Image 1 (cartoon, one colour):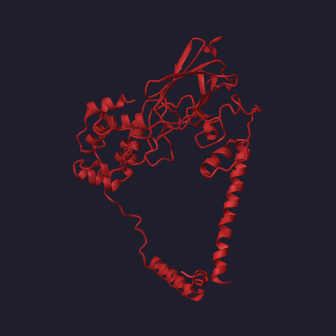
Image 2 (cartoon, chains in turn orange, brown):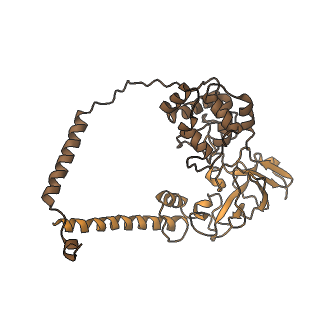
Image 3 (cartoon, one colour):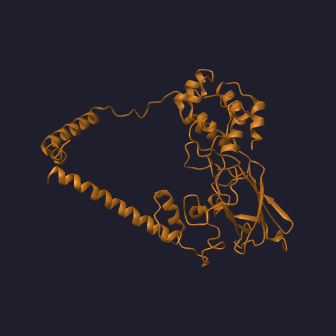
Length: 190
Length: 180
């Protein structure tokens, strides 16, 4: 083979790799976010793939994928809209996985700007990036039925509650976000 | 350049193959002759005073050590403590107060980032602390995903720099703990 032939074969190999990467990314997005679109960042593509399909069966929207890190798909890098700045899921108790509907999530950012958001029927709340982007660090509290619980630590920079609050609770995770540890003390109504 | 010149083939394959052979051969020879690393070799590192570290650790852990920042296993600057990662398998973030073992781990993490540079800064009485990535990133003078969290001369800065100079400013460290 001539040198010129060698030179021509390299782009074909590179194109092949790009094509494989594109297919992987596309598969990842199909598995995670439900759309086919290229995600160039392989780390991001893996995060999306790790989400898998939505076990709740909810249609895509504000009630879907409860308990998952929302900004993996709805962050500034996409791939899905709307872009969210903060979002998460609140549960009733520490041990259970019943969603807390009608709770008020209060966020206070480093500039002392306060915003409040309600949780929906799957316990989700979301902040559209177009309406507010908190300046970190940010403090969080949850209120429901006369009970208010402050997050023990501040949020450094992560907008997805579930990025840190995953089950099971352990040395590297605080477990899911809940209102009361003891089901017996859960308030009767909002 | 003429059209003919542009279409001319690059130098022949034989010459390139000879050069490649030499490069590979010399590289293999160099690798074979290099001495194997000494497993027992130790480098003495003189870090800042461990006994004076707890107030510094307190503000670092509080300000930098949440789970979404340096309270993660995979970080080079890995910080343990109440606000984030727990060293004890039975503990949880936000659970028990920071332990002595966690402060020890934080000390090793901070000093171990750039041990030779850290030793040099300490040997120089804390002079030119910006040699340390820890200081540059904290101040935001080097790209830091968490932004510029420390301002030159603020309480956090004075707490950290005082420790590097073996003269911890306890008041500054106490004030630093109030941030944010």
